[in-house]
Length: 216
View 1 (cartoon, rainbow, N blue to C red):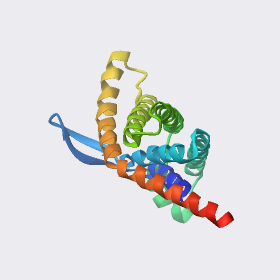
View 2: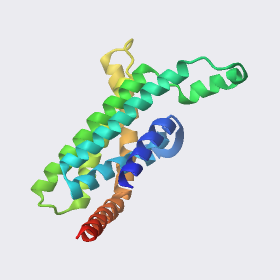
View 3: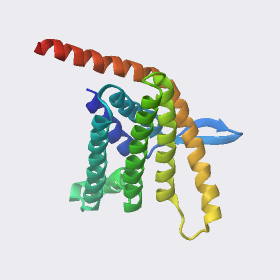
């Protein structure tokens, strides 16, 4: 179930993340966010849950599974949107390509961001877990999520939106204006989803105990 939820979050974020919705204002400026913001904290929380119950090795395996899903989804999307539409579907092909279409730049940004962020999240959570002797899971969960989600936001935005015809200073200001508000919202979502980490750990431990009792 945990793996299914993880794969769902990845696929839904990839397919539906292009939609941007208004999300109040920040310092008097209107704030818009991708609908993927509701799913990304969940993905980081799931990897933390797996580290907590099954260790770093199992969490890394989950991350690599997710990466394969992201790569395959990106490649297949590029493939199917490049195919010509049959006669009766030509009228709707433009809308199909607009919804599901992606560029090589966006595909690379998505893959790089996912790998860098999830790997860092597992690394930080594992280190904090060892130092804190398994105490303060809420703190470990949020610290690792904050760092991981900042990396995810920064890597994706820089690769996807960097303008090579502009200088570094302009790009820094422009990209920071996208990354920072988005990251702050994701941090808030991470804090709100903290109870899910405790519920997830209880669920996995209870399931493992039941399986152990069934085999005895």
